[in-house]
View 1 (tube, rainbow, N blue to C red):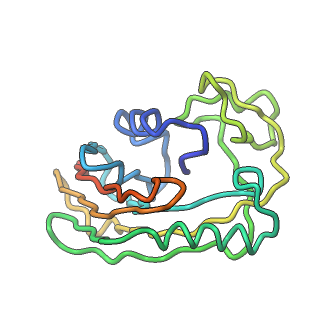
View 2: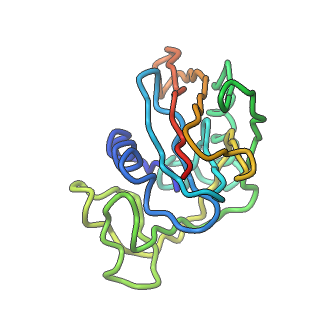
View 3: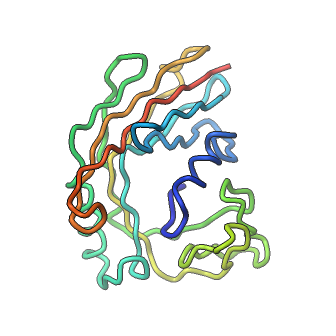
Length: 198
């Protein structure tokens, strides 16, 4: 699950604020970052692990205009190189940050039940192509996306065994600088969030 190009971050954050997304299974995705004023609360059941990006660059050739799969992955790596000052803690205890990359391309699939509210049922078995994202954020372009996607980023995994029942502070500190995306300015992409296990 990721922020697609053209989808306002506020819409993604608002959706996850309310429900932590439409999620099942024993590992849930959590959008931990969002800037210095980001303060989200995620209610999760006991026994669930958390997977969260500190920063993740995910693109295909349509989104970047770059041809050559290796070049797309290198572009993702170059963006991640602009991240600095990374620190992630759970109730003040430092957590390990892992670099994750997709050397092989992967398809992007949006399920019928998704926190974007996109209608992905008109053509069963096909991907909802996020290029371009639907203007009203409701009706997606449900067509097969033939382009493989590549990603490179910094991630956190918190096993369920480390999440105690009750409220815990999940804090990320990170800064991002890029000549094109931030105009050379350094921006705060961290966040202070609450994980409530019950």
